[in-house]
Image 1 (tube, rainbow over the protein chains, first blue to last red):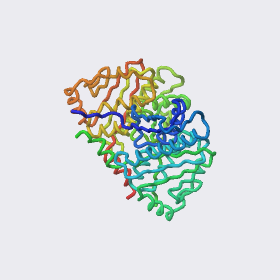
Image 2: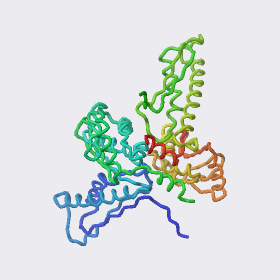
Image 3: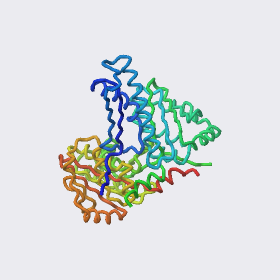
Image 4: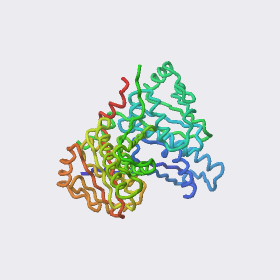
Length: 221
Length: 221
């Protein structure tokens, strides 16, 4: 009789630090900016997604201003948020891989985030990761499609520690074979350098697998 | 030795009408706005997508200003563009269905287009169509996620001629069974009424199938 089918993501964080609501709110905003706002499984945002932080003050550790103790608290809250956010991606529907996408050298942080998210949300990129295929063309196309100014002749693409494209030049079959080996792992790191500025951002996503479609096409049958 | 692997969409239109470049350009802009700009298969835009129109003037039918003949030409060019655009969707990778999404009652045309595209691009909506599942919750979530102001309590959802939600009230299992029958078709029409204004837009998309993932994960193997 009970069959809740509500929001897809509800995150709850608790602390015994003693700090007033406005500081807790500011700290949480900072923490989610680089964690929950930097993940995507399938690009679909639930209108109910939510992150809550509750503080009961029991520890007696009092934070009253944005000083050293506050920065320390933000750093811990950020670490907890990031750990949870990364678990959500690894646990994504049908996910066989977790991919960390780090974009460097963008004109701004915002531009870097947009490029990273464009890659992370591309169905073509995500199916290529599922197929363990070093399809750099799809990544370049997603970058070109992010809506930020880039220099198409300056892009470095590095999988793990293996560079496959340097200044947009393909480094050959040996590099591609090394990347193909890396793509068999469950955890993959892709670094994109745009050589256009100092902006950087990191996001996390999962691949798009056959199981994702099966789960979401037939979950009621 | 020859193995081109270039842009995903190159559309060429030709006409023997006789009209100057600036009028042909204006006509083509109008024609693509409601056709090629209103389709999505997987949300991935190729940076090489292109629509060209060539006119050789051989018919001797001369168009020199934005009068009646020009409007007639735009109407024919629009029809040809729409026919081609709809073929692209029906032929989408792994597509088992073509879905027409008509959004009415938005505050503006632009808002209607954004809502229609948010539905069309949602992986959760597209897998539900593949599974022939009348999952109105995912459609409502995509609408809420489109970034335009809506009245959540006023939404009508109609599949073909069968209304499933009226003013956001679910009309029951009988209506849902009728919708489930419609979802077995290859061509599906979804109408969304937002009751917030006079803006409307129509877009076309395909479902997200197992075959889409297979094609794109293993196309090189």
